[in-house]
Length: 136
Image 1 (cartoon, rainbow, N blue to C red):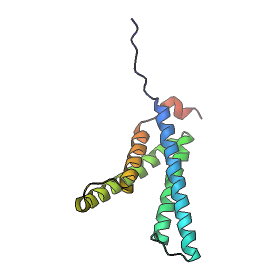
Image 2 (cartoon, rainbow, N blue to C red):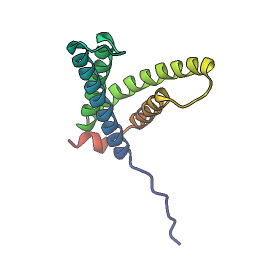
Image 3 (tube, helix red, strand yellow):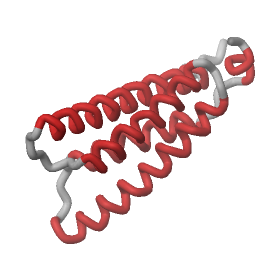
Image 4 (tube, one colour):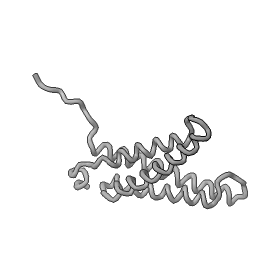
């Protein structure tokens, strides 16, 4: 009898998924940062100020840079995504834990942001195959 192995996604697929998730997060950060700055420049008062818009846009640029480099099969892109998603996961986890202590346990936008960053981190940590990184 032949043994049937369960199918696992290849390590190249995980790198591609991490790259495309990074593109989505980076694009969204750039759009939100730009839209916030434009709305504030027009004179409308909103919660996010220029500094916040710059931080969100800057993080979007870093995510997008790492994702594009990873999709272009550069290992630097993997390192950038691991670094930024790891830092954001840690910072968001700290905020979620500190806020949860005073407000009880409920699922909010920060919890989804934490989950997304953890997924990107895990998928970026799985090292793609050498063949995938050397064939460009």
